[in-house]
Image 1: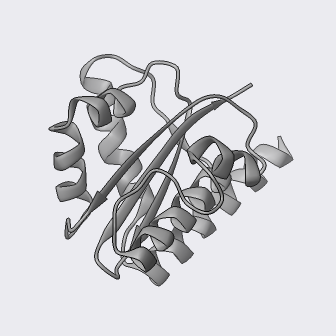
Image 2: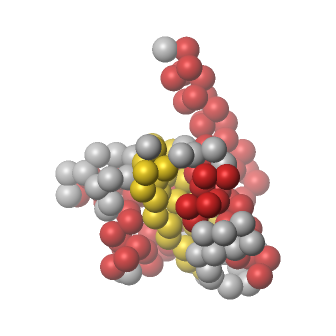
Length: 146
């Protein structure tokens, strides 16, 4: 019981710090994702601090090279998630650039069949969100543990 409460507090603090530092709110993005999932009776996702870190690192990387990519010097999304200590059974990634806020980013992803499929992925359990204000680069990492 203590570890569950501790994990929730850590995620809440991580989300607040993320919001202050980057101008985007992973809790709001989670709400938007779960609103879409609820429309088709899918279970809600929860934030995971390891996925948040992987997504943030990738958003910062894309901003540094000023281009969208699913790969970086660390490898692909699966490699990046695993490097944060998340042992996944399945993963997905959505990326975007230029959108001014979470609603615009979600609208772009929901209008893209492969990205919409990630948002509505039945096997996913967790979400991580990254954002860089340097060009408005967005990353969503979805995963489920082994």
